[in-house]
Amino acid sequence: MLNLDKSSANRVFHYFSEICAIPHGSGNMAEISKYCVNFAKKHGLKYIKDDSSNVIIYKAASKGYEKAASIILQGHLDMVCQKESDYDIDFLKDAINPYIDGDFIKAHGTTLGADNGIAVAMILAILENNDLLHPAIEAVFTTDEEIGLLGAATLDKGLLSAKKMINLDSESPDVITVSCAGGSDFSAIIPFESVKAQGTKATIIIDGLKGGHSGVMIDKGRVNADILGARLLYHLSKHCDFELISINGGDKGNAIPLKCEIEVCTKDAFSFKNTAEEYIKIIKSEISCREPDFEAEIIIGEFGKFDTIGKLKDRLISTILCIPNGVIEMSAEIDGLVETSLNLGILKTEQNKIIMASALRSNKKTSLEFLEEKMIAYFEGMDCEIKTGGHYPPWEFNPDSQLIGLYKEQFQKVFGAVPKVEAVHAGLECGVFADVIDGFDCISVGPEMYDIHTTKERLSISSTEQLYKLLLEILAQCR
Image 1: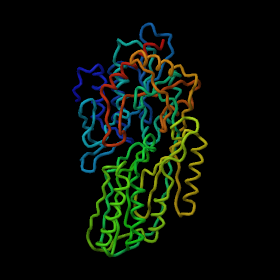
Image 2: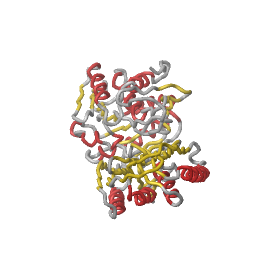
Image 3: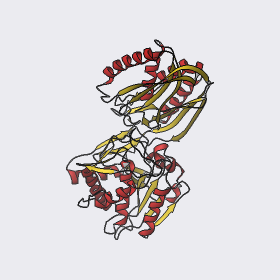
Image 4: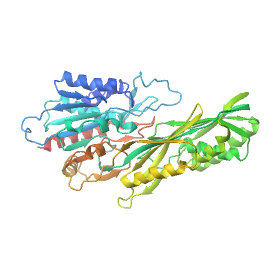
């Protein structure tokens, strides 16, 4: 348990500690959902749990707020599970191990899950406190946000009466997010006929890249390990004789791959290793300013016969190397906003097939549709199966939002400064709610978090305290 009893938000950190103790990666929602249900039962609050394990908890308005319009407080229950290569954890069974480092909460060897566990913790702290002033609250805890906003998409919005919502899935209290990207998942499944090859196995391990969220970090110059692996293979193919056994990198579409592992079979392991190491030096020199911890290791294995992808090798390497990736277009309307992008997040070799999966994003619906068409066209000349899905709508800016004005006003009172109003190039569940609720008014805010979706994720304690205080002030003004 995190020892933050003297914090002004001690109950928030109490609940966050309990959440860290419950495995809750995407697709593994049963226990965290049950935890929320048990919370509602313990505090005598009405709740609904649906077939997707989404949970809604209802709390009546405090005295004097009975006629005020109700409000939704919303966060998601799942986290992105990433770990250091040498850290031993089973995300399906084991707890996250948080610790305090100065003003930050971090996790030993894994992602912390403050995205979005701290939102759930803040909402639970509000729901348990009967001394607060607030309108009727509809607390919405959704599942599988990180793999396509799946829970929010299936949630019956008819169970909600409120038209105002505070989403707590952002990363800075001095920024009000008022618009987000829509997105979809694109994958190509490329078949191959396995071919036996004789030689020495060599393994290339690319590691130490920063990775990060494929939306908010896509314009930060972070190198994609899968594409870097293809770059190295392309160079080697011009200088060495080898066959490709496998290439694997990334396991989350919404995370920039930070590691890639490649296996080849070569007749001249000495030449292959020397050529690879020389080119790795060139790459390291080129990208060291933005990827200072990049490293690549060549491991020479046994001699024997190996199953390889055969004649697909050259075509596959070129396909990975040249696949559309990263920033596609910047916004002409909002300065500095990435409007359209995509990320090759999963590259996997399975029996007789290669899987390539990308997360597509755009703040414009038509641009997202065109990007899907572009990807389909890119793979048209290749014998492969195309799959698209996980579509979620963008959330467009509402110039008449009352919540924006209220947050600005209270932020200035508490902190003596004016918060920024921004759009974000990432999917937020706000778009799913805005798509079906007429007259919807929403903002997204959150405490300071850094390097989410990576093992360096950290949450500011002081910022969490500040945002929680601000949130209570805003609820008190909603009458």
